[in-house]
Length: 145
Image 1 (cartoon, one colour):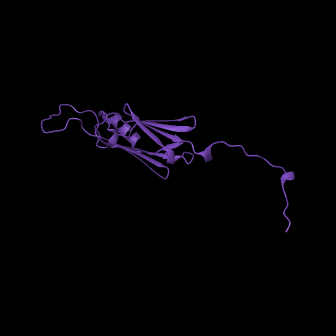
Image 2 (image 1 turned 135 degrees about the vertical axis):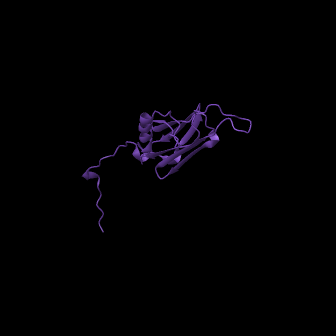
Image 3 (image 1 turned 45 degrees about the horizontal axis):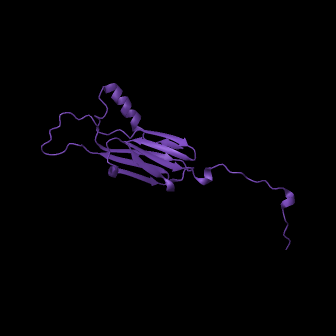
């Protein structure tokens, strides 16, 4: 139902393995981790987005390209704040997912709870199995003119 479209994610993981740098120290933040599965008559995509204000979530669909954008800002900001340790990645996180034509992108439902953004996308009616009735020649009427 979808296609992974972030080829640089695997390169980042490989580079981290060889350089022994802790995750989150790259200049390019990692993509939002996700799970995707079919549940009955809908497709569900769940993105991990802990510590992100729901107002900082942006979801767009253009044609069949789903783009999720989230921004995590530092929680301690100000002149009197002296940061001692910062391991949590901050900045803009994006994830693009190519959706199949069999999904109804006009009826996506988005919920954000406990740091997880969950999108529920119904299966399009045209993609659902349906019965085709078979007629026989005796049912045809000939029109004469």
